Image (tube, rainbow, N blue to C red):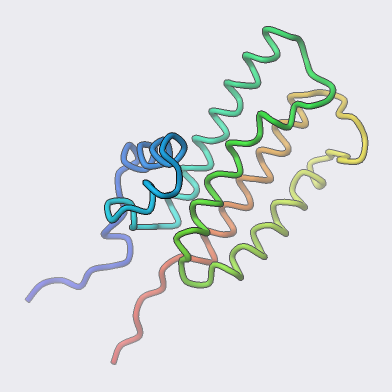
Amino acid sequence: MQPEKSPDDDKPAIGDMIGELLHYWVFGPDAHGSEHNQRYHPVKLVVWTLVAIAVSAVVSAARVALFGEPTVGWGIALFPLLLPLTGAVAHRPPRYVAGLAWGLAAGLVTPLLLGVDLGSSLGSFWTGFASVCAGFLVCSLVFAAVTWPRPEPPE
């Protein structure tokens, strides 16, 4: 008799998750939709978001080093942060609509709670950047929690 599989048994390794994200960024959603990349797990979204935050931070640090602290137009460095959630929604996990609604709500409130006034210029680029990144991370965590695989009820 084989032991029952839990929903966490098919979780890929961290390196595989990062590789899939980078593959998605380079080759787009068509290549990402191949049979090899069909497995979605909420942990992937959180890892993808952390990688996207790291990429955005490196791009922003390079831009600050080359051109100084930006006052406008710095949002383009946040573009990689949109891709993890887009990839997760494209997989259409269970309860993804509720996950998206709750995740976006939590993600929008987080920077405001951290003190970012989106209606005015930011006092410090890195403070604003960190607050917005925290919002994306909270959005991913909430989306992952809502779409987490539930065990099948016994028959």
